Length: 64
Picture (cartoon, rainbow, N blue to C red):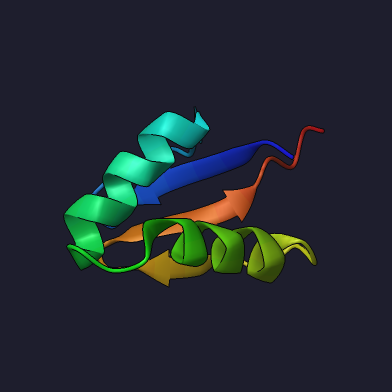
């Protein structure tokens, strides 16, 4: 599953690696369970939804 991200101030979605997603989660939620948040994001976007974690939005890559 490829994930795209976009901060609230950006207009374009960008494909994002798992390593970069972990960095984003850490920046947005601090010392929370990063892997748990990542698992939640993957599960939530499976059906085509967009979710927000802090000021960053996540969605599944629609071109796959």
